[in-house]
Image (cartoon, rainbow, N blue to C red; front, top):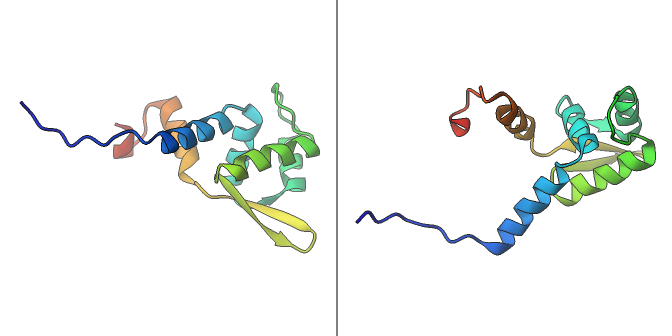
Length: 113
């Protein structure tokens, strides 16, 4: 009989993981993550970048702010103040690589194999 070191599934951690994946269930939030993977942006810059999207996602300024709040609550993005603007940054830059890994199934990282 093989003895494997098994780690119990932590229900609190499981809940947090589900929250993160729920946050990723929106095309608008994924677009925000992709935009922030290119560098820090203000809400105005994000609105301008996402304005041309032809998807079922809402990219108006108030909705972008709501999407950013969801991502911030999950720890995916953060912001710092710059005068009267908030500048957002992606706290998990590996997120786009993970998303693309799943989509492409051709990731070079050992974690994807």
